[in-house]
Image (cartoon, rainbow, N blue to C red; front, side, top):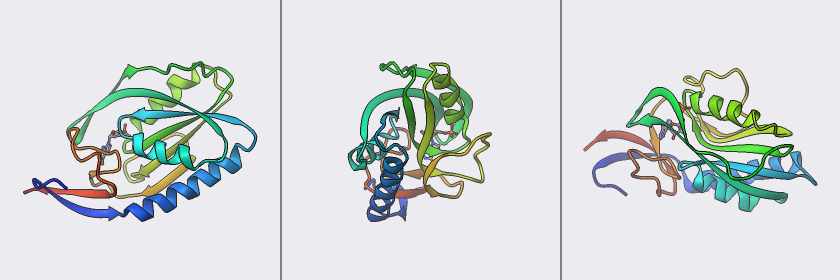
Length: 176
Ligand code: IMP
């Protein structure tokens, strides 16, 4: 754990793993006998996606996409595509795997961007959702946990690229 940050545990490792198992079983039931492409949003969703992909009982492929919209703890309101998909998603079932939906800007951009590639379906799974901040014209299909508007780190979520590898979710208190 970082010595320079005041970290307060919000969601424990076992709460995360129970919730991931539940989402995986819902996804498996929704896509029984079908193939799904998990579109993992780099870098934050890597641990959520790797746990989820290993917990589902359906055939799934993994692809990765990267966008940037964040500097420190504030969004600059723009989304830039840094790395596009490698697989052909035309006619495929897609599940976008996100770490967190904060303002909703990223997920809105990704849904529109991937829709233009003519998939059969697009669903979204996000480990975290800040409902008081997110402004979305659609629902997030699977949400791990709803949280308040505070900045959080761990289990993939970073603060300026640090603290991503913590195995639980922490509120980021004042720097000490
Ligand atoms: P949005 O576009 O505002 O929904 O933000 C999405 C992205 O911002 C996420 O994929 C994260 O990378 C980052 N982000 C938003 N809130 C947090 C947070 O509380 N902790 C760490 N990263 C965050």
